[in-house]
Length: 441
Image 1: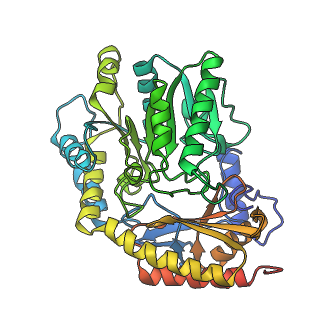
Image 2: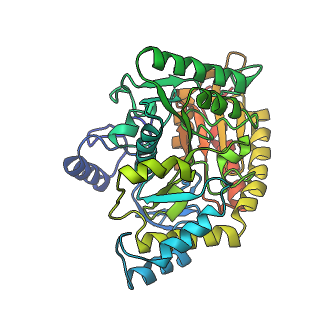
Image 3: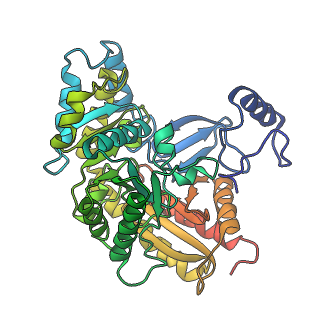
């Protein structure tokens, strides 16, 4: 599998001598923990819009990258970054209007009573801060996450990220529950998810760890992308609050209009979280993230603990994030995601009629999961075929990834500026790739 098992310098694949030397150098300097995408890695040197370009000048359609939400190297974002960097860049212990302008604009996209925002550099830091605040607010230390979640790379949130692998230990204060899997669960999906949360909360308490919070990525993107039925998250939120815990909505992947239907993923389920973590697309590639919260949640924490982040909320980051949000609103990218996403969904369902590898197509806006199976009746994950599709698309100039524990769900998550022509190019490449699979069904 390309994403899980990257090549080493000695891997027996058709690499140029230049590529082999580059991989050797990377391994020597960066060590073994980093991973590369694709069986035949890419050397990307330039990006613009929905396109990435390798060292030979070949263009690749990016159908995976939600970080560059308004397009790679958007000229207005780059200009805003340069202007502010040439004027002032410092920290939040001085008064500065840029961070306030952005905070005001950002908070206007949230429902009441979410009214404060604290800034970090990464989504991992935002989730780490959310955990600190949740523990301080509740006096508890237990956390509930989904079974293949990813919430970041700090020591605290890595323990809440089962997708990082067996080498990252969860610890006794963490319980996992199966996500609301609408493909494999019949009946009341939301009710069953809530029952699992109640069971996990009870087990934590029985072992001396009262539950501080339930934290979920609101589209369950690492678990396999589960967005329906609408409202199915609400019973679980009620369940955690019934036992005194908080609800943390991880919007690092789901937010900023990506689902089209609503600006934030939690809004699709008609809930208002206690804490909301943001990241990735917030700066269109610039490292800026944040944590939005109900003001009463942070009162005691703020009184007892000073919060300072040297780079979080600096004027350059604020200027970049403000420009990204302005572009999203001006260019109506949420509405654009709805329209182009509908075209993609229609095309993917048409492909499912022709290719029995496709067991399910699900999602909203420009966040879609295509689950590949070897047998539709039994819904057996087609992990090997998924790896072949990812690498086959790469050879055809289309970049995509996978998610879910079996790595069998194609993760369709392009920049929000992805248009009709891009969608058709992707659909045609996917059709061709599925047709070329060995023993195609």
